Every structure is written in C-alpha cells, then in structure tokens.
Image 1: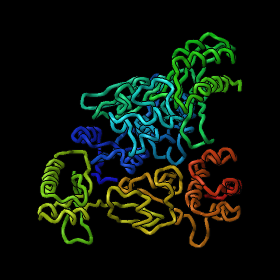
Image 2: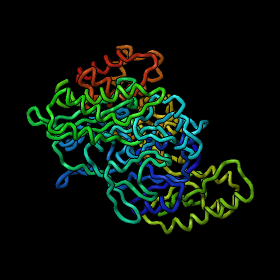
Image 3: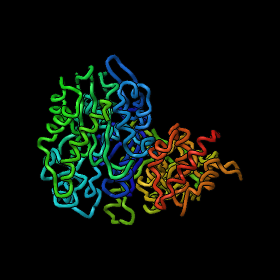
Image 4: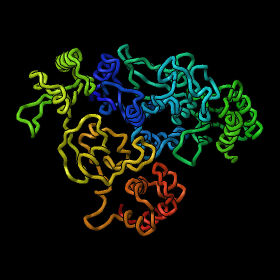
Amino acid sequence: MKQFQYVRAANQKAAISALTKNASAQFIAGGTNLIDLMKRGITSPDTIIDINNLPIKAIEAYAGGIRIGALALNSEVSENKLVIQKHPLLAQALNAGASAQLRNMATVGGNMMQRTRCPYFYDTALPCNKRQPGTGCSALEGFNRMHAIFGHSDTCIAVHPSDMCVALVALDATALVTGHKGNRRIAFADFHRLPGDTPQKDNNIERGELITGVEIPDNSFTKNVHYLKIRDRASYAFALVSVAAALNQEGNTIKDARLAMGGVAHKPWRLHEAEKALIGKKVSEESFRNAAEIAMKGAKGFKYNSFKLKMAPNAIVEALKTAAGMA
Amino acid sequence: MVFYSKMPNLNFEIIFNSMANKKPGITTEKECNGINESRRDFLKQSSLLTGLAITPAAVLKAAEEKWDEEFASSLEKMPLKLEINGVNHDLSVEPRTTLLDLLREQLALTGTKKGCDYGQCGACTVHVNGKRVLSCLSLAVMQQGKKITTIEGLADGEKLHPMQQAFIKHDGFQCGYCTPGQIMSAVACIREGHANSEAEIREFMSGNICRCGAYPNIVDAIMEVKEGGQQV
C-alpha cells in the first residue's frame, strides 16, 4: 500500500472541503472495498478522509417513508425493526451480501460506492478500461463468466456487485447527496450508470459530493417479497444472477409488482416492462414466465456467461413464486 | 485543528501534522524541495481548516531543522489509544498499518491469523466494540478509543472459554489456522442470536473459510455451546 495522509472529518463541510481541495483524496467509511483496492495498488489516494464521525448514521421514519443514514452499517440496516417491518426485501438482500463480519463494517454509502469485482479490474497486469481508460477490456474476449448480459458496451462488460442496491432500486429509493452546491436527490435508478464509453465512472455522483443517506418511500410490498441470489457456493459469494421480487397481491390478482436483477449489468437492473406485464394478471407461474420473457428482451451473453440467458428468467420465475408463497 | 502531543521517546514537543505523499527512496533534490514545500504549505493550510482533525506524520520540528527526509519519515506515525483484551495501549502507528498487522507485528498477539489479507477468508476475525470484524481490512488508526478482543482475550486465565472447549471436544479443526477466526466468529454468532439452527449457523459462519473442511464439527461445537445455554 502506498503511503497516505489520514484525516478525520468532524463535520460534513470539512469532509467535502478536504475532498475538493485534493484530487487524489478519498472518503473512507467501512473501508472493506477501499482498503482492498489500496492493498492491490488499484487505487492510491494520497489522503484518506475518515467520515465515520459524521452524524449520518440514523435509521428513522419520516412521513411517507424511512430514511437510512449513509453510515448505517449493513448489519444495522438488515436487523433494524423498521426496515424488517416496512421493507423486508431490503433486509433479505443485505443478509445475502458478503459475510457477517463484512456487514458489521460496510456502510450503506460504501455499499453504493463499491467497485466491480471483475477479475480484470483487479489484475493490474492486464488491460482494463475501468481501471485505466483506453487500455481495452480484457473480459470481452476473456473469462467472462461473471459478466453482464444487459447494458454492456464495447469498452466494459463488468457488473455492479451489490445486493443491497438491487433491493433499493426495486423499492424506488432515492439517494441523498450533499456537496458545495448544496443538497441533491438522485433517483436510485439514476445513481449508478451504464459503462458506455466512460466505464471508469461507476455512478453519477460528482467529485466533491458526499452521500448522506437513502430514502425509501412507504409501499405495499411488506409481505410478498423475495430476494433470490444464485451463486457458486451457498453463501458468501457474489451473485451470478440475483432477483429482487415484490408483489402486492389481492386475492389471486397481482395489483402491483417490483422487479430488479443483480449480477447482470453495470448497474442494479430494474425491470419496468416485466413489472407492467404482471399488473392485473393472475398469480400464476404462467404470468411469471411471461414477465420473465419480457425481462430478457435485449439480453446478450458472451462466450462464458451465456448460461445467464437461461438462468436469469428461471431465477425471476423462482423469485416471484417464492414471493407469492407458491414455492 | 492540530494535535499537540508529547511522545515519550523524544525530547521535544511534536505537532502532529500531515506528510506529503512521499515515495521512500526517491531523493532527488527537486523532489525533496517539493516535499518540504508542500509540507510547509500544508502546515499553513491545516490551521485554517476547521472541523478536520489532521493526523500524524510530518514532524514540524524535523521540517524546520531540515532533517533528513528518511528520518522524518520514520517519525510519521500517529498516536493511537485503544484497549486490547482489557489492557489499555498507548501506541504510535503508521496510517497504513492494519489492525491485523498492529496486533501481530507490533504487539506480538499472533493468535489472530493472516489468511488471505483481502477480506475473503475470516482468519483475522476479531471483535471491535463487541462486533465481529475483519482486522485485515481495518486500519489501526481508525480504531481510536475502541475495545478490541482477540482470541487471546477469550479465556478466563487458565480456564478456556466454552467455545474453545467445545472446539476441542468436537474436533472443530485440523490444521488449526482458521480456528482463532472461527472461534471469534462463533462466539459473535451466538451473541448476535444467529445460532438457532444448523442452517442459520452455516449461513452466519460463511465468512470463515476452513480449507481442511472441519465445518460439520464446527457447527456441532457451536450448537452445543448454544444449547448449553452458557454465557458466552
């Protein structure tokens, strides 16, 4: 690890100002990804700004929703009574991510900011447009088993690794950020971005901005929800495919639905068209299969990940069946 | 804000402040000057920054005296107070030091193991303020004022902790390298209330990899301690 200067911010203004003054500075919260990246020489900030003392840790209800502070730990969120009661899908997704130890360290803001786990991004001996723009994408013709089937570009086919973010995008969350220009609200679906020709940019947060929290509006998805994560081992692995499914059922009819996938794109992948296809339909495997087919429109696999083209729709059906209590 | 402190092994007062991003071993005159200048600039700037506690590193005295950069760099440490296994420590650490390296290299507490060093194996699991975390991904400087418990702090004198006893009874290890991490994680697993079934134990212990494959015996050990209802 390269030497760096360590500073501890006592308030948001100081944190933002320290970050703005130094192009090589980075915030640190849980550090579970940043320290990993620093050890491997993938990122080498000359200053790290510890934001753990900032008062943005609370999980609280407001009229119309709940607000989760950016510094709330993943384990604090998944065990929080309000979260379990109002958004069990989020709690399930969090518990599917990482390990108990990492969830005790990782924060909500850090989870949003984590980098891809594409092995070529981590291998500094090989080209990677995300790590070193313009050098090429090793995964395109390489071992791309873990990679994207939606929204990829010629420059990058990496996926976003988060489970939490898949639930948040399904639940219509809003990211709260603050910076020199004041506060900004970003729809969670617009927080992360597709690679296009600038894969070095994972998200739409601007330099000098700090995530302060996430808001989730109250909704009717408190009962029939399921987060299904398919991975190479039973636990503690990144998703090959994951599905966040939420249904609002009235008798045998679907009144409303939310669907999103992880492990398939450069951002948490919301499935609006498939959701629309579910509304008003009967709660049945046939409806779910139809929605899954719609969800897969535009998918394109690569040499080693084409299995996802079959796995993803099956996972959608399975997640919806479990959410509906049919599995 | 600037920290003033007295280091016990030095005879002058030090103002802890920042260092420039110095690459050790590079000593061209130009770069040396650059470093000195940026240090002084930073000292000036830092007093203007409010709400920012600036830690360790460059020693003002060293900069003033134009001491050799290598020597100054050896002083670029920051003070750290923490409690480890009930004992208070007053330390001085380089910001890059992980909690794992602090324990093993600086304090000779080698019970905590370095497995992968990248947060993938759980061998380095310790408790910080009662929560199980990975010490390899924790910077020591970020543990200011916290209470750390390592495997060395579990036993009550000569009397083993119930989880240690259960691991022996159920043969919960083969080579033993992952065992300190497994035991620290297992104790936390019960305290958290996540040891109510074999399936739940397996899920909440998944952050601790055992390459010998002692998993069934580890689960048995945890089940026994949980069902025994002893205080862990």
